[in-house]
Length: 464
Ligand SMILES: Cc1ncc(COP(=O)(O)O)c(C=O)c1O
Image (cartoon, rainbow, N blue to C red):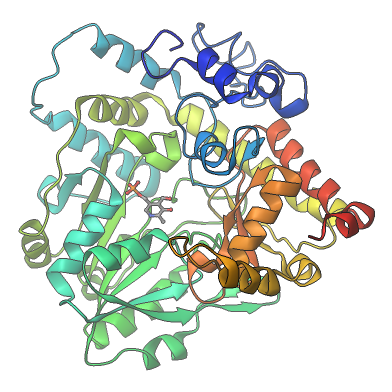
């Protein structure tokens, strides 16, 4: 990789002044990636993959690590805990398949192999006992193009789309693209767990509400919605003629003792026929930039309406990587899910013991944590910070929210980037989303940085 034009990591690190960081895994003294990147990522003699050794992504134009350093200044972020992708070396089946394909040096238009769809169908049958027929499915270049095409098919310009907030911030960009408006039904936080508010949800359905985007497991709150939750919300949507868009992209990350229920597996066929499901291997296998996803519905009329709104071009390497993931990556994924479960336990425990100003709970699914930073936000007065910033900002600079001030404060004082809660809709106030899809050592480094920044003595001198 280091030889490829535009991706010369060592040169980039030197230019960015990040060599010291990369030389030790965020200060742990562990070489990041350099030693092992030429060797195949293989399980050890015990059959276990090594997810523990940090693998540096600095200098790869990554949104998670390089972007915040570009935006906030070189060296400002030691650990990227933001955008939802993972820091682990890909499953060996993926790397091998890509290497093999690279040996053929022509990159013309791709005739999608039927084996791709067959792999997706086999995966869903084997792992989730969901039957998908080839004619019920559309392969696309991401969940977003699928959601946007569906909104365009069912939600006229200016109409309302239901969201249960806090929810994935990217949905708001899908609404922008389809020129629709968010109708936010806040989840309730009861006894340390988010719940759907069915009455509030139903009360928000008006004559101009045609679609609802469900997120299961829910990004950022981590809920794996139960069969009962899904039936109830599905019944409301069916009764009130609201099409249900089920985004299940995080479904492979289910923590111990929890269960992911595919919407399409519900027993009531009329409810299932009122839905479309969106999935991808991109979260599960770290393939986000390979731009491949798929959606399916048991309702042929709905699929027909979506098809005319949908246009997505596929890319060769994305198809190769995704196919190899489903064909040969399951053992890697199963081990990774177990590792992430350990990360969740570790982080909840660490925060409970060392960061009393932050409230955390263990997510049921996803590799995301939804953290309550109210105490810190009040202490540093992020509202006043935002007001001050907005009063004095340059005419061409955007106005900022208190949560964005919190994000900036953490970058400045802890060198860690988290995602600011306000972007996840109502209920995101004073919250931050933390991505823990990384090595435990990197996670520990990030949490230690935050804990140190929030120590009373340090904090009082850092209030600026
Ligand atoms: C719930 C959810 N849906 C969709 C996406 C993006 O999907 P894609 O990259 O396939 O468009 C994300 C990415 O974080 C996500 O969390």
